Amino acid sequence: MDWSTKFNQFFGALSVEKWQALLMQGLWNTVKIAVLGLIIGILVGTIIAIIGAAPKNKWPLKVLDKICAVYVALFRGTPMVVQLLVAYYVLLPAIGVVGVDSVTVGIIVFGLNSGAYVSEIMRGGLNSVDVGQMEAGRSLGMSYSQTMIRIVIPQAIKNILPTLGNEFITLIKETSVLSMISVYDLYCAVVAIGAPFYDKVMPFLFMAIIYIGLVLLITLLIKLLERALGKSDRRTSLVKKRKLFGIRKGA
Image (cartoon, rainbow, N blue to C red; front, side):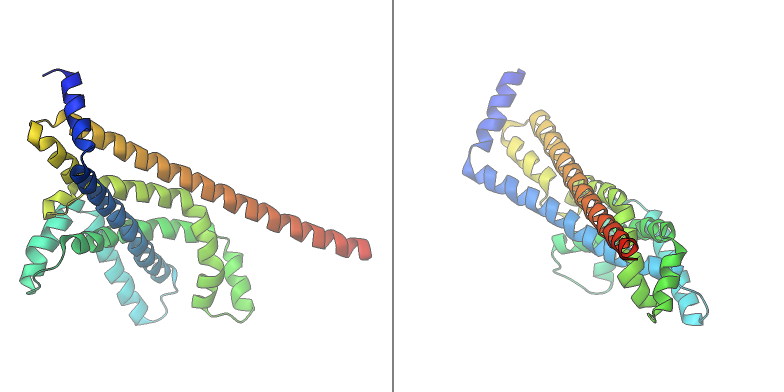
């Protein structure tokens, strides 16, 4: 069978409403799991990073720090597909949980996996913020947690934004293993479209193009966000300079 025949059959099938709906469902599940997984990962990773950066002057913090270290080592030391299989086919049946939607399991596992990586990313971001920022917040009467949430973390997130974008891209690509726990993702959708023609060449090429498009879109959004934050920083700096200039002029 020549390439033109493969092309016409596959894209002819894509013109059918049934296959279009299945493709959109698979694409939606892929994006939804990656986005929600990243959100969970940012929340979990930020909490772990804060615990790691907090002074260990009390034993509960020391215990939490050790637990977080084990958590990070566990999820960074095992492949995503192994985590999905263990969670869906081993842990859930072992604790008597049945009937859980595989998409929900995928979101949770992706979130926990991402949290382990984001914790290290956030730790680097917190270290990149000048220690004087923490001292300034504490001198204003803020507690450690208030200073972290209001002053340090916003600056850290701005510093690690490109790295968080890379983590999102990684999650998007990792969704290709979700079919292992029966999630109807982008992979399952394109394979199903090509199945009636016993063709996997065009489906795989088409899937690769979609993944590349998603990655390029995410990269563009991150650059636009960085540019917007850069303009905000420049406006803030200009306002401060004008105020300072006005004070000197009046003096």
